[in-house]
Amino acid sequence: DEEVEEKIGKYVSHADHVETFSTSREHQQEDHRAKGSHHCPHCEEIFPFLSKLKIHLKIHTREKPYSCSECGASYSQPDTLKQHERIHKREKPYSCSDCGASFSQLGHLKRHERIHTGEKPYSCSDCGKSFSQVRTLQQHERIHTGEKPYSCSDCGASYSRPDTLKQHERIHKKEKPYSCSDCGASFSQLGHLKRHERIHTGEKPYSCSDCGKSFCQLATLKQHEHIHKGEKPYSCSDCGASFSRLRTLKNHEGIHTGEKHNFCSDCGKSFSQLGHLKRHEHVHTREKPYSCSDCGMSFSQLGHLKRHERIHTGEKPYSCSDCGKSFSQVGTLKQHERIHKGEKPYSCSECGASFSRLTTLKNHGRIHTGEKLYFCSDCGKSFAQLGTLKQHERIHKGEKPYSCSDCGASFSRPGTLKKHERIHTGEKPYSCSVCGASFSRSDTLKQHEYIHMAMKPYSCSDCVKCFKTSTELKVHQRTHTGEKPYSCSDCGKSFAQLGTLKQHERIHRREALPLL
Image (cartoon, rainbow, N blue to C red; front, side, top):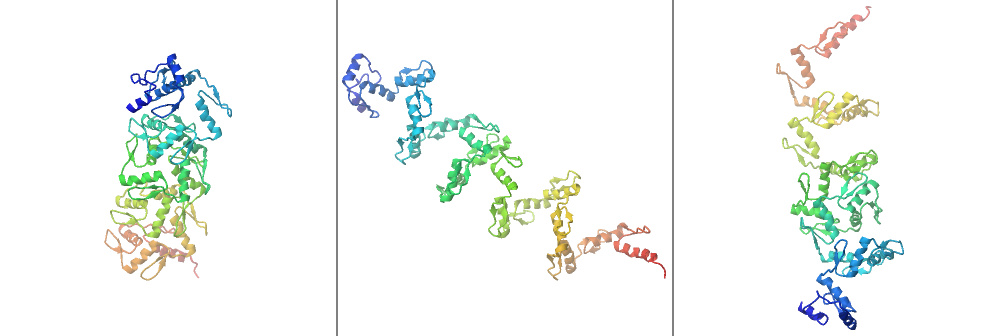
């Protein structure tokens, strides 16, 4: 400070220093006599007159003696006050000769004119990038210095720009001043609204120069371009894994830290990824902003809409490298690939049976629990699997959507159609491992195998007699119950077995023959 005072000592007395400058005629005359190079000891700016230096020094002392009579705002220089007063008077004396836009300050006009001229006089000394405004350059330089002078008083988050801080503060205040005129969704930032509106308009203004693919966001285009360049500029400091997108890196880092910074304000659930939180919030709001243009069906997530649209387009972008089969969803492809790899990662804790799909394991688990979640609304019958219920409902509806291309016979279940088709093809895919005999149906093979195994698994509860097939057991049980379901249409006599009825009917046929 002493060195600074020495520098301005020949202009200002040590007692008065900077705060009490005289503007008397005597000093003004002295100022004119002292015309020359007057340096500011704080910033080295040069002035031709001492009076100009004195006014300038108020910037450093933060003295603001000039106040606005309308709003009380104070300024260090009279010219700045005059510029401010034009806001109240709504004076805009400076006009653009190109477009006619008018401004209250000459500096604002100068900045505006650079839009037309393309002039960018302020350059970054680190990377050479140019800017039309000095303020924009200063904000840019903070990228290189890492300076973040604007801090949030609520959570301490810091930012390099004041407008970014204001946007952040809306999160704490829960302010969402920007609303979509199409669906009413509101946003804390204008940029977020603009991006959202492209969902309704379908606008994709950013195109890839390599493949022509279009994007609704510039950042998404930039990330996409890394694919063509093979760039992965974002590296994990823990394991060295590199990524083409910063967000993917951030998501990855959560594996190491286990941190979940994103909290749901409704239920308190935490998420490691902001995108997961946004998707979760739709559960509470029941918002479904993504609509199908073909059928009008709406979805809470864009990815769900994209998957749904493939139903209409028939698109199957995911192909199996082993057999070439295509799928509309990557998850379905992953499940299919397990067939080739022989992977069955899902195991039953009850019996140890393993499955390639989680849904198949869940369906299997109901065998042990006896759980039947799906009920028929017509007859009340319950089923363990939704697919089985759907097949059952066709009985009530009389639906038989599966038709034989050879004879036109229709069936309610695809499995029944397959069995039927073997009549025409002669296919017998089920072979006996003992004698090689083949069968068109698996249950017929099982019955055949009992011959070799000398098994009689069907036991009579009345006499403990055993039988090879369930049909034989049913016929035998009629001896105990007295049931005779087969009746003669001629005399009304009943029989327990169909074969016995057939033999009896021959009697009537013989009686009907004429005597020779």
